[in-house]
Image 1 (cartoon, rainbow, N blue to C red):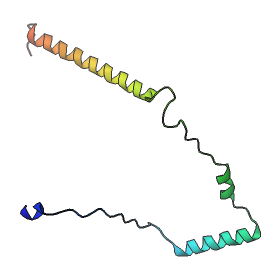
Image 2 (cartoon, one colour):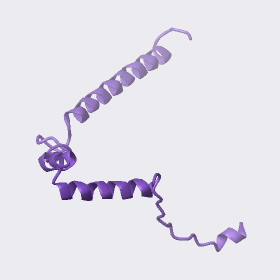
Image 3 (spheres, one colour):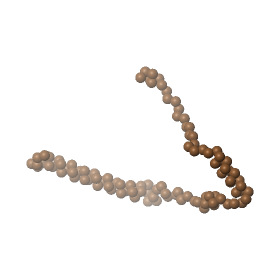
Image 4 (cartoon, rainbow, N blue to C red):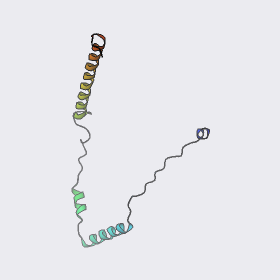
Length: 103
């Protein structure tokens, strides 16, 4: 315990290693790209990338406000559960203190 008292933790280090690295595949892809550029063959992926336009605006929030409709539904469900809990607790309280019902 005393040895850990003066211990200062080391800084966290970021060390990422690629999972799969195939230098032959990298070389082959680069050579294939150069040959296609020399012959004027269009790559389908490049044309698809030109037409791709992300529609991120408005995807994270509704325009109605900062809360989404799902959070309103969740709040209503939570309120219903709370009301049911109060009803059950009131019934138990009534049966326990004000009735002759024996458990």
